[in-house]
Amino acid sequence: MTTEQTPTEKQYGNVLDFVYDAEGSGEFQLEISVMKDGKVAVFHNKPFKSEIAWLEYNVSANRLDFILEDGEVRNIGFPVKPSIAKNMQNTHQILLILLDDDTGEAKEGYYIPLIIHQN
Image (cartoon, rainbow, N blue to C red):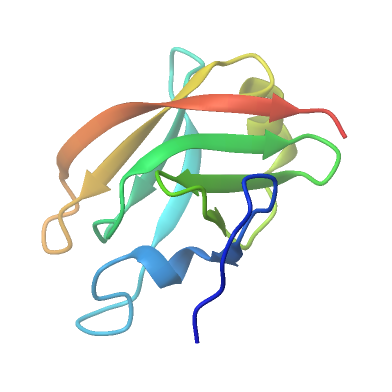
């Protein structure tokens, strides 16, 4: 079944819905960290199926959402630690880093805009 989406509605889903092989060859791992320079990075071990347009952080709900190019929203499913949340409120972009499943080394990384919501 498909549903139509009006421009003001957001379709919410789990982050596992849009990563390749989340349940196939291994677990999907996602970690939010603060780097030495105070910038926030999101490390993940599975590539995303869709382009991420931007990230949204809701301060009140302490929730980070991934917004896809088509407007769909994917919640990461766990609260952001207070020490990281403090840094998120002071940034305008987050570094997404794809890790190699076998070695744990960074394969690629790129910055995504971050929008902060207070309510």
